[in-house]
Image (tube, rainbow, N blue to C red; front, side, top):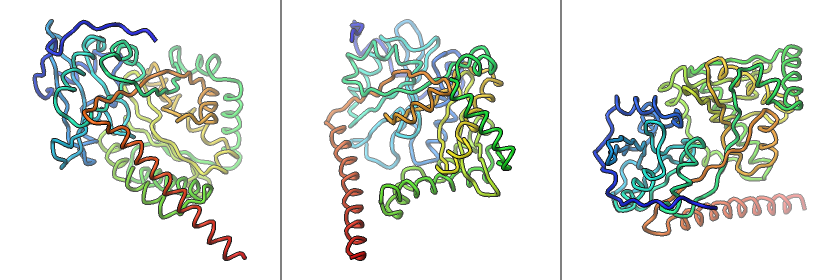
Length: 372
C-alpha cells in the first residue's frame, strides 16, 4: 500500500487549548466528513457516562483551526491515562476541520500527541475521513483494519429502493410489511425513557439467548453486558440528542421482539445498535422492517449516507447489510503507545474468552455428571 510521505515537523501545528463551542460547531458544519459522534453534544454524553472531556484545538501555520474530540477515563492518574477518540462502543472520532482534515495535519497532530506522555492514544476516524488518515499512516504506526457498510441515499428513497436494495432485500421488506399487517406487529418510534427501557429489555434478552446458545452462564453474560453498556448509556444518549436519536421498538401482542437505535446527523445517519428475538425476527423479517423505516427517515431528512456500522467479520451480518444496499468502506484504528499496551489489552480479551470457555466446560461436565 503506497502512502504519501509527510514532510512536516511536530511544530507545524500549535495546541491552543480546549475548543470553544462556537468554533467547534462551525467546524462541524464546514467539515463534510464530520459525523454526529464528533459533536459537542456527543462529548457531553460521554462525560455523563464516566469520561472526561480532553478535547483540544490546534492551529496550523497558515491559520487553519483543527478540533480533536477526545476523552480520557475520569479519576485515573495522568501517567496511566489513555486518550480515546473514541472508546469502544462510542463510535468514530478524529479531527474536525473546515473542508476536512488534511494528511499533513493528521501527521502533525499525531506527532504532538505522541510526545505528550500518555500511556496510549486511540484514534479511530470515520469512513469519510479514512483516506486522509491512510495517507498519513507512516506517522501513525501500524493500522488496525476495520470496515463498515454504507448505503448511498443520494437520489431519495425511490432510487434507493429500485437501484440499491438487492431483490432479496426488497422481498424481505415486502414480507415484513405484509406479515406485520396480518399479525398486528406494531412499531413505536421516538426517544422517550419508556422506549429506552424497552430497547434495553430486548438487549438483555438477546444477550441471554446468545449466552444460552453458547452454554455460557447467564450471570456472567449479564454482568459483562451491564458493565460494558449499562442502561444509563442509552438513557443519556436519548436525552442529550433528543430527536436526533430515534429508537424503534417492534412488538407483537405486547411483547417486545426487536429494537434499533439510529443517530441522525446532518448528512449521515448511523445505525448504532440493534437487537432482536432471533426466532421472531426471522419469522416476521423484523430486522428488515426496522432498517427500512430508519432508511426512509434518513432519506426524508436529506441525509447522503446511511452507515450500518461494523460487522465484526460476521459473514451473515455482512450479507444482510449488502441486501439492503450497504457497500463495504475501509477504515482503520490507530494507536500511539509508549508501552505495548495493545498486546496487554489483547491478552486480557483472550483471557476473558478463556474464562468463558472454562466456565462453559465446567457447566457441561456437571450436566453430564448429573445425567449419568
